[in-house]
Image (cartoon, rainbow, N blue to C red; front, side, top):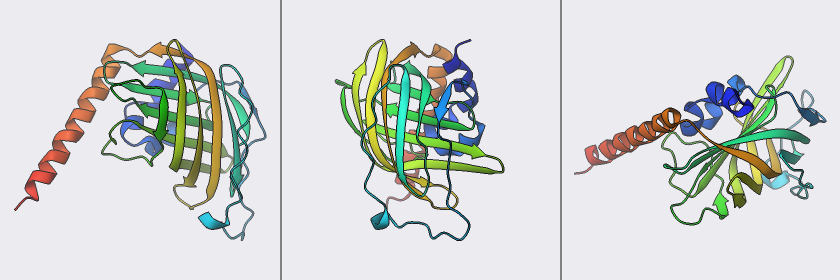
Length: 224
């Protein structure tokens, strides 16, 4: 079983409808080159958005890896082995980078036309935002602390999508429990892309259809 398949079994469908909800449960490979996480010292005042330093420069790309840089309350600067999978019939791409304990998950909802281009980055939403859109989450664990970030603002540029996937992103990420903020940028290049199993893609499709039905019902019930 491939590295991506191992991660997919753990990350699962929940990632697709609420990517941050399963951050601490992610699993993956063991190839890591990183300075490790850093969080503010006790008593440090967390930054407001307008107090953050400028976003870092885009790091140099490395084939088969996600390379990331941050500025702000929390640092995740590293180079992570990466995997990717696609459900072509429903236009879903999942990218996973890093081992358990320090990992990034990226979800892309592809447009019906040419997928190459810019995707707005939004926070995780159980209503499964319409394409084109990207959601990015980060898990960071260092004994005894565990942190879960979601990117709630920014853009992702997809530059390649065939047998491999490439692109970059510039975002602002927020820790979901203690409200730390950091600019989070990264570049992923030539990540091998495998087709996800039909059964898995059908589960994703059925879940999104169920969400659409619920949303339509809620809208109808509110009509006068």
